[in-house]
Amino acid sequence: MRHTDAKNTAGSTVRRRRKERHLSLDELGHRTEIERTRLCRFELGYTALHEDELRRLAKALGLRMKALTTRARRGKSGTATGRRTWS
Image (cartoon, rainbow, N blue to C red; front, side, top):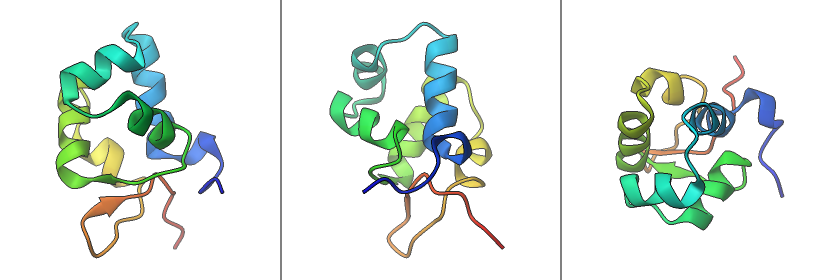
């Protein structure tokens, strides 16, 4: 099951920036050492990434961590689901 509407996710931020930089999932996976399928599932809102993975993504895409973590729901395990936090 999909976590949320793709327009409101950290995953969609990653996807948009990856496409702006003309990077394939394979290339981004190589740069971040995150499996292509895992990146794809994160972009689509199906899976969470750990904080260290988010840091590598932010660095590879020239984003601040805040761009990914403020839109992601953070769990006790330090993961981000890509879901938007609703107050």
